[in-house]
Length: 301
Image (cartoon, rainbow, N blue to C red; front, side, top):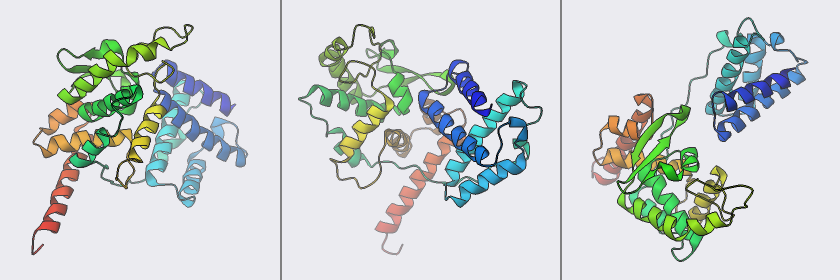
């Protein structure tokens, strides 16, 4: 029964709330891990789950050395799931009401220095079609601070290149307009004129016209994992000994704007943050960098 309820819940998120494929995959993995735990406890009905069972599950995660951030994410998933069960009438009382979230670890986001960004952007081969496409992808990530799924979902009718703007649909399908820098605009125009038409022509006629901006070598939409592989490919070619992901470009975008005097509220709007507290973490990044430079540079630091 529980497996059927999980399937119903995920369908509700996909159809009713339009959650991204990445979020749905993450929720599915977390819930199936929870179902596996319940099966070991001999529990197969939602009404048999109480706060004691849930705390036992969380304790098992902690004992298995899961990071606090992972435990917090799994707990948030379960909260959403049990709220759904209560709304649908499968449960009368939410067993998570008496379960508190663990304190989140405060980790500063990873970002790149300007010279590292330049090295990254110079890696794609400008004489190859896929190199031209990859350069446009990296330039747009750094220029506009898009989330990975926002870049994946970017469509041709979201582009206003004459004025240098992108229309982006963020979390909860919230729309925002993001400026596109000159270098990114030039790289994107070159890709659209010289490469994308040939890629689009490769698509199977059964698939139909691909309106997404970034296409793979088969002419279909480039996936999030495809973009992650592109970033990993160029990471191996540059002398950066840290983990860099597409989201690192978003962190770098925000950090560099604030370091160069941008207003925090403006950066909040550009990133599509609902709560400014999500944006304020980047002020800590810049303060930490200033302190690091001071400690390295001052003779009596």
